[in-house]
Length: 292
Image 1 (spheres, one colour):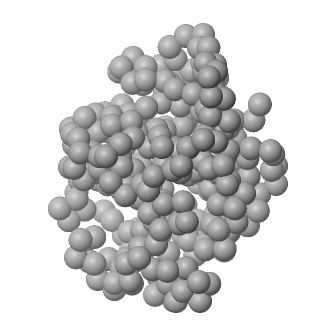
Image 2 (image 1 turned 90 degrees about the vertical axis):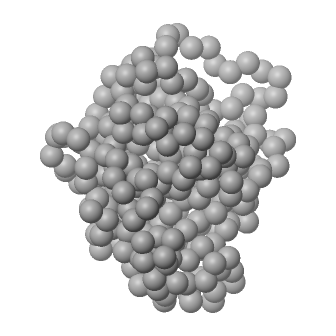
């Protein structure tokens, strides 16, 4: 059963130690995953999870509380979410680590719940666990505060950093149609290895980035929009955002929030917003890679 992909060698080398790099991988890529914007019940509870346990670095971006990982930022907005990631078409945030069992043990020891990656069929029990940590071996899934879901995959890179942002994972019974929409919107390419429940898309100049799955237990779900949920929206960092937005419109994709050269709410970087057909809100940014 294919439920995760081991990290491929697309990650740059980082010095060992705290995860304190910026968006440094693939600096010339036209589009990269940049950030995740979370609605959270408790800023401190999320800092404990993302920084204290996973090893990100807390900082401020203007007035925004941020946890920085190599190649992605987690933005924390103090607002009680309307629900977890479960029930939306955004399933989880993927991270790569050198030792999944060690990180899973750390998460379990801190009281975070291990969960399954693949939803069972209706009426069936989830796969049985054989312990409280790293029962999946080379990959594992956990729930953080407010039901935010993450995946840990194994990085086989020599001298791999302690943790690095790795991929986005969507879930939808229309997983093929969803993948095709993201290929159209972001000029991504089809990844080999499609199955009857999985298809991938690679961002240009980046590689392994976007996963689209169909779980048996997800077939009866009508997904709700991500806006207001714990993962409110995902962010992509774009070169020449104004031109990119015009290209999106030429493809028939509506801008839910038009291009802003200086967005006060995002510390005066350029932004725009779109929403995919399954309700996942997507913020487009230009300048996020300059966060210090």
